[in-house]
Length: 152
Ligand code: NI
Image 1 (cartoon, rainbow, N blue to C red):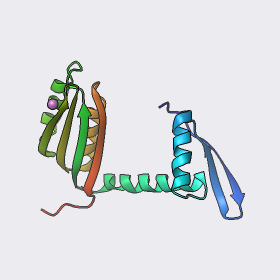
Image 2 (image 1 turned 90 degrees about the horizontal axis):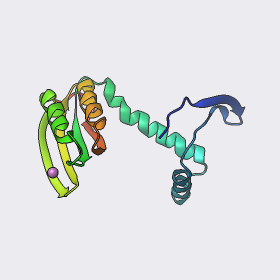
Image 3 (image 1 turned 60 degrees about the vertical axis):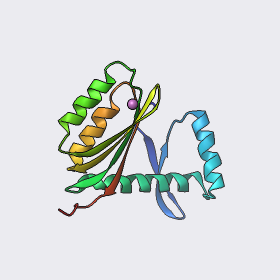
Image 4 (image 1 turned 90 degrees about the vertical axis):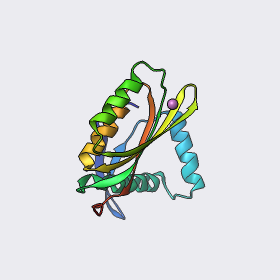
């Protein structure tokens, strides 16, 4: 994915003021998206994108809370140089945020790890970003189960 500054303009429609933006997508991604939103009966592409943006913002609201709990799901190739050691270092540096780790050897080239995490949102984000940046990490997702203060 290339990142670029979004271009935008505003206009007035019968429904009020709208903000127009254009995005650049891989054609295959755009076709798959249009096909899926047609299947899901969105009236327009803009309606589908607006819902995705709302969901994204809601998903990110946890960052402003004092403490969160959730799970990090991580897929990586253990044969990529240094990734195992680097993941180990990252997890040791964040031992206060990691409650438990489950490791599954999916096959010769893929390891699946599930980390139960709890702590300050910034520390959790730091851990996820650090692991995401490693070569050999193929996918990483964070699911926040308790976005508000976790009871002691
Ligand atoms: Ni493994």
